[in-house]
Image (tube, rainbow, N blue to C red):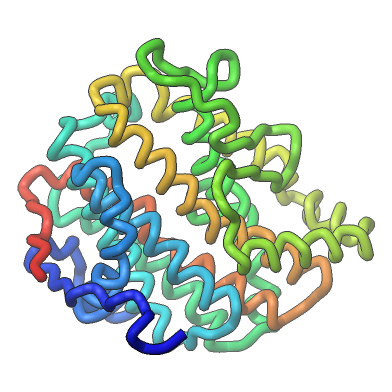
Amino acid sequence: MTDTMKEPRPAPVRLEGGAPPLLPELAAVMPADPALANALATEFTPTAATLSTPQAYWAGLNGWMTDRLSGPVMEGKVSPEQLGAQAWAIYASSYWGGLELREHWGMPPVIAKMGIKLSSPFAEVQMGILAQMKQRMAAVNAGGEQCLALLPSLMREGGTSGTVYGIAYNAGVQVVKTEDPPIGQRRPHRKPKPSALRINGRDFMRVDYDLPTPTYLKVWRSAFERAVTANPDAYEKVIAGEAGQGNLRELWRKGVAFGNTTWGGDSQDNWTDAYFDETIRWSSILTFGMEAVGLAAIVAVVNQDPVAARLAVMGNALYLGATPGWLLGLVDTGATLPIVKT
């Protein structure tokens, strides 16, 4: 293809204002990089034109960005020095997604139901991200063997920062929005979306998407199947854990179940169908990278592979600001979205 036949490059995009809360301590390991955010927003422009509503721009940018950045990380093409700024970009776009949701549809009832009470500058949330980021990056910088030693505990973290629970929860949220009872809480006015995303508590580490699957995720799915088939006993030991550690299958079930209780029912009753559909699309895409990380973690420990372990820890670090970013965007009532300029 000649240069004259190539798709024209989108006009550069500049995001002005709207920076997420960032304490100096967190900035030291997750530095703000507006130039990176601008470059990614520019690259997102053709995809943004496919959105069914402009009210889902930031949700779309966030989901697209997680997939866009996850691929190179899970392919070993990103250095530890680059990772912090990329994690900030995901944190920032998640924050903007939360701001966008609240701006158009009000504070979701789920926030009150879960008893979440936070106030600016949200130091507790930021310091939580900081502690996790420092732990992951210390292992990454120490090398693959240290990452191997860390992974069993990361697998068992009972929040969205965990390599198992995070996948189960995020996918479970999509199921509760789209499926009929007893596995979901689809509202009567929503068009059925059978198996828009499939996950359950019975099939450990299995997620099926009604979307094209990226190559990097296919690669880790294949690696996972090879590891499990070649080393079934080691695989079961990884799941069972050492004495006193929780069983990963039970953690998986808990993650799916909790996802099925949060964003269903009236939590999204007043969203337009267009915004609802876009959130299903992009929240499912956000799960791509999380799944690749979770599979890589198990491959690494089963095979005692330090290279896979380092990639898994780096991929996990990339996502540490994702869920907290959305939460802060939802509750930061004094904030405004960036202005998108071309």
